[in-house]
Length: 131
Image (cartoon, rainbow, N blue to C red; front, top):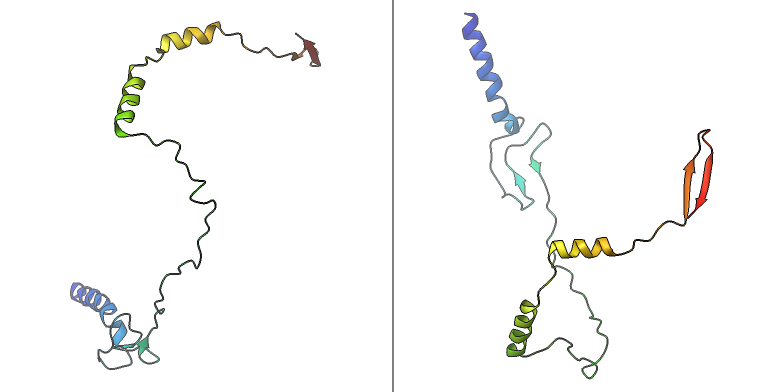
């Protein structure tokens, strides 16, 4: 008996959300989604309805700002296809430094030294030293 009552309670609780929009009104179906018309069913206070935002075209800028003139325009990197291929092949032929060569050069360069060194003596006082 307890099992039957428990199952009946579960079924009733599960079925309640399915009829939640039909309370207090008839089961009429009207309008369409997104039209702002009344949707069927109703609630405790009457039919459920909603409105949607109206569609408007995207804004288009009224003007365009351009500086200069056709006379002042001169493309700086324009080359013919054959010249571009020749330049690319020349760039490929140039050998870059290896990692070892770059490291050796870096070791040979003189690094900038600090002109003033700030240290602390045994008593905790700050000591300034010049190189």
